[in-house]
Image (cartoon, rainbow, N blue to C red; front, side, top):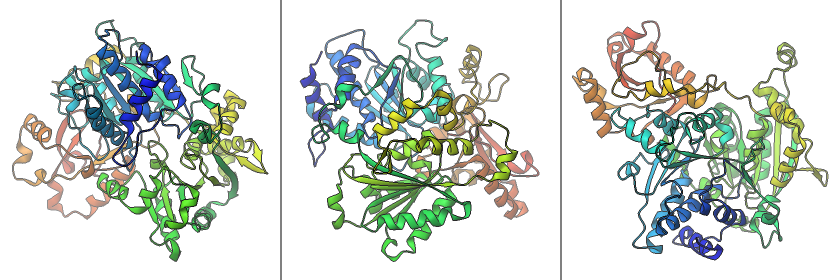
Length: 594
């Protein structure tokens, strides 16, 4: 097996780009390779602070796998790595990393550079490289919905003919890495049940293996990979891990009335951006994000320095947003404070769409109060490299005493969790009378808090359902495209029963207006959409309740003759429906969350 220097050499060669040399591996990356992957061992949980390059797990797997293949080892890592990210973000940085690795792979080894790369989210549609040759190493990047539905023989945007193939390739000889697993607990439970430790494996083949990753894990898994004392040796100048782990983040929490929230956030963001800093603003509601951005633009110095990121914009707009100067500054991880005078200010107003899966680098942060797990994610978006001295201002809305009195005693809600989180953060170590919110201080706080406090300060989790072999058998009958007893939609197993916001994806296609298209056999329609797939940038994903409201409003404005028009819905199989006949009193489009 490769020694430490050989691994470091491969790491540098595969991370270089056209402008810069490759990176030296961090100490935890070297340790994960030597102590785990090179020995065909995979920790069940990778618990590392944000900003330490957890996505490099992909690269570490590839280097170890290639060496094991060259050595002819039969007992080796899975051939396919499936990297799952819960959030749809502006840029698929994991895909960009993998594409760079593949490009560099050809220069490292001209005879052994085969690698399939496919993404089931972001800018690119599934190119299906991963399904062409099962023996070829492959990296598949996707969302919980797109990967999870395929595991359960119900692939969203897949034809019923492809669903058995996709389920087989994901469920066999594959390593599934779930990033920010705390955001996807129902899915984490699901993949654990169908992995090699689950009840559905008979010992045949090479069952799927699973590794969860999180910067906000509240559990103490015995097989947990985390920072060790040796990783933090040295000084911030000589050890990047130490520099990022001790990054200065000065936290201040202020209570405000609900009607003062927007004004407080706007004023603070404008103040922090005056020295040409990058300021990220996080708020819960998309409506607040848009209103706050408009208010900041009224400042003449910031008129062209503000962009908005929410989960309710189409992929096309997300792709365009990535190219804008404001976002380009936030994507620059190596910018230092002394470089600001020559740059323009940058303000990004975002909902939770920018909290995870996005290498966002801000100098300062302003936000509203959220539960502790979300707050830790937000803190990870500011001063990620540890070059500056970040100011973090949190505005906590005072709870309505009447509503608080009406709420059930000990009821665990989003609001109660956010309030408890603020109380927990007040216990952070103080430096010069300011709360220290560095990753090191946050880790120390998590160690001090009791399990009861951590639970109360974390966002409520959706109720989860059990997976059974009967359900798997029913879902695997993919040639039966009509609804059948005992085969429910898979969304509850991916998101839980009471997930806060089920998503509906809407696409407009001209085919539905072609005369006679709605009279085609459903198999012919499946073939049509298999050949002419709906591309991600053509779609709009919104909370289902918003989609329902939009459909009803549009329905009211349609003349009677247009109410006979057809639409198509996909719930584990295409179906052509007439809204007027199916929903005579209201127009509601039901759609899976993918």
